[in-house]
Image 1: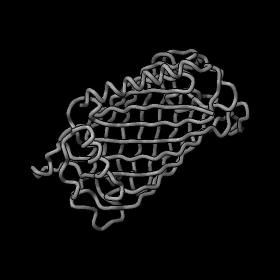
Image 2: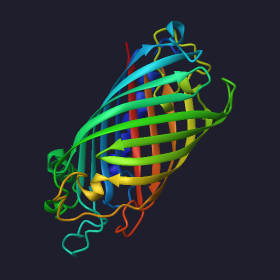
Image 3: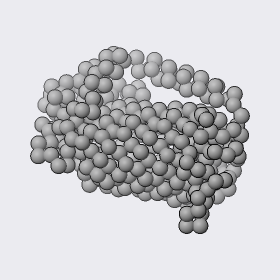
Length: 327
């Protein structure tokens, strides 16, 4: 079943690519809808644990671009606003963990809505900031959603959701800054950027540092699909007709608090099963990205070290992304 699903995803993806070839590559688009799906079953490894599923649907629009730019600290900017609805689902390592009395990571779900703005500068640096409100626990509907798609795909049913962390409402802020390190030419085939991220709230409190290495055919940061910045109000004067590149993004995170592991920050009764977080978590993304005209497609393999001290193994999953731009 998993192989059939992956084949279907690839067919749909290449169909979208073919559709995207028809448009004028110089045309600009002001709006974008993106769907991102994370799942460990995309790796065809027949495993279903830890961060087992994520689904994110977003809508973005451009506020202003460089031809009608605001001047901030003497530099022209381009700004894009994004609204996102997302759900993340977490399980123990094995589907029979509950029956065996070995729930090494709490069952948990996180459902949220997010508003975010990205500011792109002429020097290719990027500032992002946003706010998320959501819920962790039974009201995230993680148990119900997992039951439905497991039944649809013919995957085993998981017992143990009755032990998930208790309900808690969440508010989180995020601040990201991207500093362009290497590769200045618009027609470059290799570049490196450094990223610093801070998340603060009662869902996730952490600090993350990472590097992004891109190799292939891609645009500058303020016009690239990798940074969700292929939106403009003026005509799109791209250096290349399309983007097709591979990327590597290793990152190191320090966790202060993780409510999907520890339960609600301000709850006295956090849940039947909780886990202390690992202070340091290493994650690496390796994948490819394609974009032309109104469409975008990316795929990445993600490896993550243990995020809880009770976890018996590392985590591996894949992420798929489809984007459609329009006016």
